[in-house]
Length: 322
Image (tube, rainbow, N blue to C red; front, side):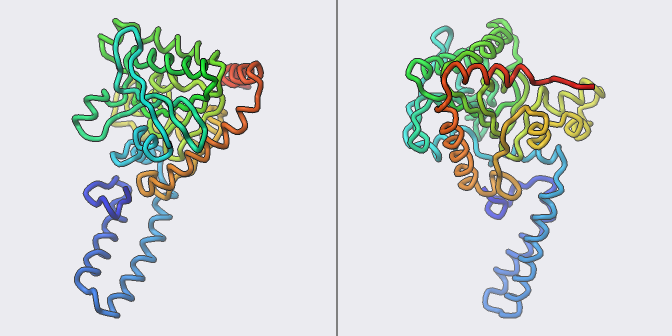
């Protein structure tokens, strides 16, 4: 949702933009038929457009983290509704239960039949609790792998949406084998004999993201972030002070352009000015086209070459030349 349509919530760096919007809206209501004020309003709108470009072109890494967490930012369920023509949800890990923090099932995207899996945070308090804020338990990772193996059985590509603050850190999750579930997914995803397209749509944090993030191609929305740890967690460990989250966000190099340069992602998917929530329809269109384009390339590769390239892609990550 655009800032103009949701003036009850704006990010700290958007305050000046919000003030301009309030002024313009006030003038429009008070002086609807005055040609003098119409000219003034037009000047203010032109200044507002320039201000938006300035503000959104000078965002700090921390401000972009805030954009990735914006409550109106499109979630996995929104992409399923807007880029998919036919979705059949599948549930359960066939071992323990159904983890609602992960949604998955058969889908059709731009005529391409595929298996979609994605982390879902929820919108309001009730849905966030129901989806465990997008933090997967072990059964969530096992559910994801069950669906990916089903895709492999039917020779369908896999599309994985990443949006999580991390895997669930609770005692129960550890008792049910959280670390083992993530490790198994890393191993098994590297061997799935179907193309895997990963899209980072919001937060891509820690093993919670990587546990369903091994793919042949990884695309990342412009203002999403992808990191081994959240800025707050990093600040708490390195500086013993979570208030240094802005410094941590800069040090982690978690923005899309940093990760593209490091070879950890393959493409940056463009967002509307200010973030995906300002124009969700444009974002859906960009993500859908990315998936279609990458599938067109990947489907032509023989399975043995697909697996070899996937292995080599992750094997070379972290290489360092001093």
